[in-house]
Image (cartoon, rainbow, N blue to C red; front, top):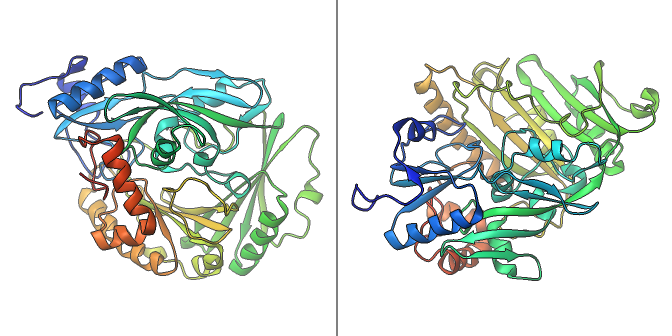
Length: 436
């Protein structure tokens, strides 16, 4: 706070509430805010932002907190927790309206029985609509539909001046472009109109194991090109010299396994899973990752041509991955080359590899966590050298030169948008290069 005693109306300084927002999912950074705001309406959000601007108080915007390196934390102001804005309602057969604090699992549940789903779902049901749209949003259907930020019709946003604005590709288009993949630095997404697609009645997933990396790369070429499967995800178990392809189908009539797997070069079909929970089928269960553990991780988008190298010569040596049975290295194939969200930074090639390294360390392994986070910085430089763009799930500790390399010609417009939509710098920058 500016004077240590000043408080915003509608916030609390209760220590328990503040401590509950002192960590994000990465758990590497601890920052205890001066106060916590938990608005229940957009009107309350607007007033909080206006009051913060007038008082010179910075706000860190937090949804599900599923970020890393302190992106949704602050120890210099207040945390604005959006999870009270959780209304979800269909808006016709092709669109669902979801407030920014709604969790994606709740969006799926609200559509149950309608045979419709968002075109792209992330793999953690506890993260929020506003949070993933502020990052980009990728998942198991990205080889068909790209990123979440290109699959929204319009957004309601509260700017740094506290103004409540509806924006779309045709109305306040600059704000629409700024907040999608804008890392929460230009405005708070309080509601989104999300495009839907038809879904099957049931979901089938094949777990296919590969020990030959070239055969897996060839098969992925075939599957992305032909769109044979609705869902694709690959887990790289380098410590066992095996790669796991999870290939999923949404269906009405029972699939033909021989037809589904025809021509693929996997070594083993380990299991086949069928479920009627189509929307949640690609999501990890909430118990899969404990918030008591440290989760240093990084994500990148690489050109498809780097896939053979990633499979055969991984940037992280298998023996360097802590707790390999629990930690995760893998990727999603991405197949769209025309993503119209200018701050969603990606290589220019049409097809992408959405690559991730996520470590799981015990609650008493802080020093090893910091060491591994430093290793990920070195890997980042290696992958950027291969043409990667970092997917900003948290702070990346980039220098001004590295930020310029990352954003390229979009950095100057982003700085201008920051001055335009958040002139007082109310939204906590968390290492971002936009200023002020």
